[in-house]
Length: 120
Image (cartoon, rainbow, N blue to C red; front, side, top):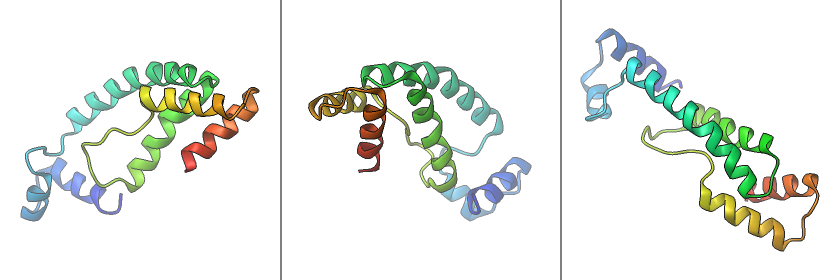
């Protein structure tokens, strides 16, 4: 944020430097576009992550954490604007299979196992 917030604010005011314009490339900063993208992601990501948690055999609350956590971390440390962060159907299925193969049955065991897999 120390790098992109000042650049974003200058772009919103129409005062971007030549280097910032070159760094933006063909995708300039746009508050309206970012708000629309944020709402679209929110509407699509939350139900999708709830379903992905069920695919992995985890409680649906874990799906909410898996949708919000990566977005917040990426907002702080990310460097590429065109990147999808968060769970996918394939990762959910593989996680569920790994938890089943490890013999993790209870909710607590599965959550702990999924957390270890995510950390790895």
